[in-house]
Length: 124
Image 1 (cartoon, rainbow, N blue to C red):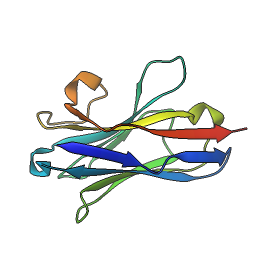
Image 2 (image 1 turned 180 degrees about the vertical axis):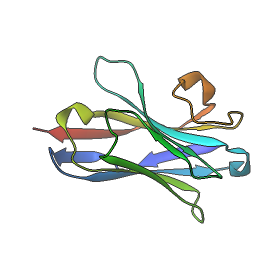
Image 3 (image 1 turned 120 degrees about the horizontal axis):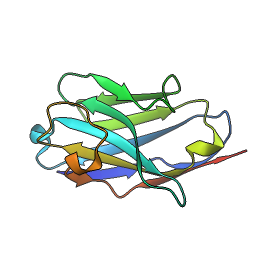
């Protein structure tokens, strides 16, 4: 599975932004997809996850109620709509896919395909 992330940019605090992740290759093998982010000087952290076939979603507490993860079946594309953005949301956002996990997990090691990352910067 190959993943291509896009859509990052610069936005003011309180604004909105949507990042996308296009999946290609053996997409039929995907069981779970997720978004992670890495802020400068910090470790990468889980943001949101999506059961590829069933549609179940899970969010980190820090983004719950502000971010929405979704999928376009026809385009094999995962989205992360981010509203009410805060400066602490700044970071490189990575999409990831797991082909052997039956449930959404926050553990990076469970995901075996990663996109290249897209920068999101929220100014105060």
